[in-house]
Amino acid sequence: MLWIRGLIFTVLVPGTVAFYIPRAILSGAPLAGGWWQLGWVPLIAGLVLFLWCVARFLLAGGTPAPFFVGPLRALVGREPADLVATGPYRFSRNPMYVGVLLIIFGQAILYRSADLATYGLVMWLAFHLVVVFIEEPHLEQVHGAEYERFRRQVRRWL
Image (tube, rainbow, N blue to C red; front, side, top):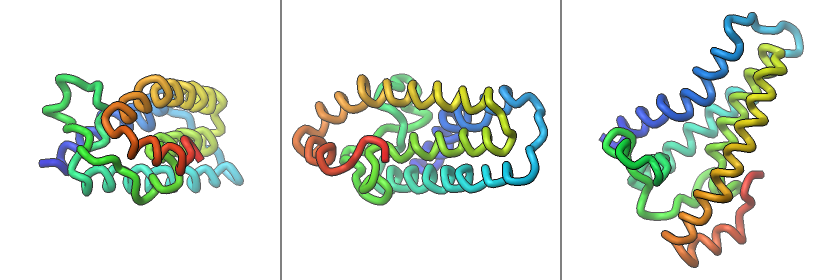
């Protein structure tokens, strides 16, 4: 059941942010040719990174669903009891967000879309504010000294 909740979370949250909204912004625009095809590199890297992060959460016994989803917990699950600090979390405290941003910016390159690049910048700012003002205080409260050690050893982004 946990894997199903992880899939539901992925479709609902990052699926909306990294695929459905970009599709609406692009509104049927064609792929750009030539060097713009290099956008596949960050897009695929972001997808692999995101899926790796989801797997780390599932293996830890939870989903990446934010603690503040409230009633949606029955659908998307809960965060793991233990701090996830393995895999890509050894290099970034927020690699899942980095993965989603790589997917967005990869699409902006593929479609040569300034509007999608602007959306990516807005999403980066939104992610940063959520991390700094909501997630980090929550993790500090729940995990205490363990999170403080993690925070000192691993960068917030890259």
